[in-house]
Image (cartoon, rainbow, N blue to C red):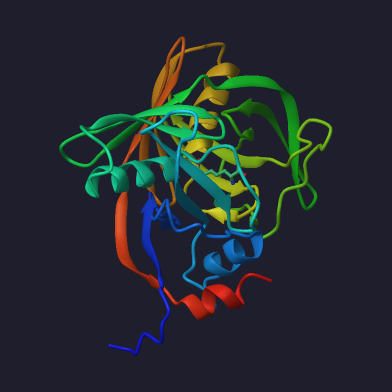
Length: 276
Ligand SMILES: N[C@H](CCC[C@H](N)C(=O)O)C(=O)O
């Protein structure tokens, strides 16, 4: 073992939900100064661990005994909610014995989200009510994509397209800042069948990801809205896998996997140097 010269390293867990990947910081008492610079450094796929975002386990001050998910995007920004992240976060709480039973609440900046983990490890998250709040468009190069604005606790723009393989998502789509003053996650959606859609997503604060849980809820909500329906269900195929979305009268659910890849320790000296 490397000599531990009086340093205490920082535990982490690496996991993903349909390949939307995260660094999870599990120690709620570590008193970490999680600056935006450290989040960017952790998410850096060369100089750091590499991830789309960071999930930190925090004691929920408003709900004693419950846990709060402090989610950060790879660019260091704070987002209200992360559907894939909640699945990974919930699985960690269950696997590490921090909760009793397979159904429990998780606090997020978008509110409390009830989760259920079945015996196969599939996680269902009550995502709350998704709401269409207008129409707008995304611009990629010289192409304009009309879409619907959907609030899933975080902002989304859902654009229906005929194909996904001709979209250059290496650049951020332009959008109307009057509609999305805090930025937006943009989904490009192909409807394959009334209960199956395919999508790609360019995430606020990250870039193109292989999956976006809140984005899949927004996509199904947007497609149903466009067809004049308020409720329905669909399988959503994203590059990182498949999730199931159910849009009900009062709430939506997202069901999908949560995978742990590795556990380890972040070198304290690296952590201090990343503070900026
Ligand atoms: N990947 C996340 C979405 C993060 C959204 C974040 N990029 C934002 O700024 O809202 C998810 O699975 O829901």
